[in-house]
Amino acid sequence: MVEILIPVGPKDRVDWVERAISSAVKQGRVIIYDNSEREDLSALIDKYNVKHVKAPRLKKVNMAKLRNEMLKYASDRFVVFLDSDVVLPEKGAEKMESSLKKGLAFTWMHYAYSEEEINVPLSPGEENPNLGCAALDLDALRKVGMFDEKYERDEDVWVYSKLKKVGFRVGPTEGRCLHLNKVHSREDLASSLEEAKRNFWRSKYDMMLVLDGLTDVTFLTGYGYYGMYYVLGIAGAFFYPVLLGYVPLVALGIRYYRGARKFLYNLIPGLALAISLPYGLVYAYLKGRRRKESG
Image (tube, rainbow, N blue to C red; front, side, top):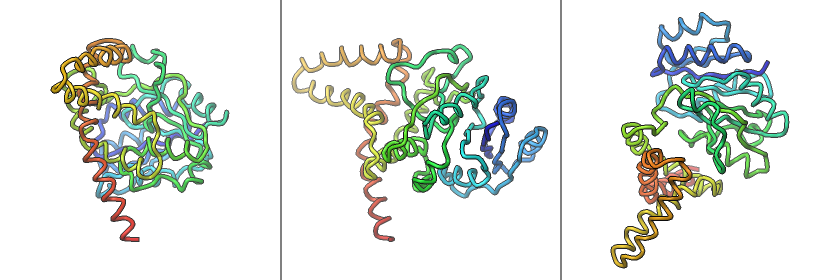
């Protein structure tokens, strides 16, 4: 059975952790990396036949560093990552391990945010890598030096881009994992605005990838698409017919998101991401220069 690594942190919900672990213990040898420093979560974990690793809380959130620490306890070549607010579907771990055995170095299952979405097939072009429900070939990861800890967030996009650049195969496994935390779901105005708030700083990691030569067109299309809303708006202020360009642009978005409502809830964080591009580029440049100066 494959090894399944689950990180448990200080802000995790007990009921979500319980569902995540329950789905995992049926499918593999589970290792819980627990840096929550919470007695209630520790007691819950100890109810299961799992390897319970207790670790001190990180002074600053750094997901790349956390995953490197977790992997010190892995003993197999193939490992599955499962976040503590994600439920594995039946045979999910087996399917992802099978993808690795067929030659992928990194694979994942996309998220569903409700039971009804679990069986929804992948949309054309839907390729959003995550490490909350994923599997990695550690031999491949070691060849690229493990996770780069300067990427405190978006380490999933980094590992996707890094492995792909050096010639490894990466891609999704058919199926979806149930994400219990709907904060990223963009299913209502509140979650859409919350995601928009996060997207104001997310661009700095995307631009770090650009400056590191890890640009992937898949992840830059969002900047192009949502950036066009600003371009058309500015150009339209001087030449009104340009505003007609919004018609095909909006139609494309509605078609991609399969409805006007879902499109609107994705438009808000998308616009936030696009307008934060200058900040992200400046941040990434200055951080890269500081790293070079410090040796």
